[in-house]
Length: 218
Ligand code: SAH
Image (cartoon, rainbow, N blue to C red; front, side, top):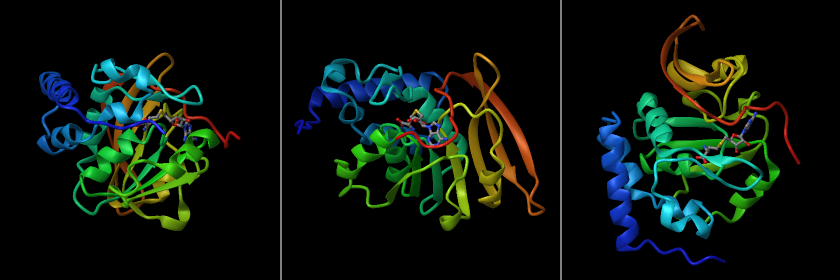
């Protein structure tokens, strides 16, 4: 197995990345601190070691991507995470985003439809550090009815529409953050669920995500 080392050089590059995120408009110190604490290069192939702290997405297994740090920070900030929040994440990917949420003290239920990525996380190198992350293999459009309701739901793939089952699995007053597909780009949406089951929508900036696809992939 690959040796995981977090050197002073990595920490220095990470500090620079955090400063860049601040310049780009991320204001939540809780989010910035969590991202400073997590060695992003651990989640990438060693070939990316030198560039792991550039503010860009990178390829991971199964033709998927680890989101750009700015995108991770942006979505996490919109979720307004509190300690002990119960969070459903759709699209585990590299599990970097799940770790950022776990580092903030939330309980994470993360779902991935690519079997290869799910299998990789069975020997997850951060299992000891983050026992508050549970991994699932499934279709995110279905959510996790058994574990519902959730305080927060995060979709990290381009959603063609607001998945109705996920709205059902959100607590009253709960937040869901998702990039909604508008053709070439996705617009970030946050919904707040009301007591009558309906929700309020707030629209934010445009981003680019890999598609949220139906069903599981073996
Ligand atoms: N949060 C990830 C980003 C991964 S990219 C990270 O931090 O690295 C989006 C991921 O969503 C991909 O791994 C893709 O396979 C997954 N995905 C797409 N559609 C899905 C669905 N319906 N259910 C679960 N995962 C899905």
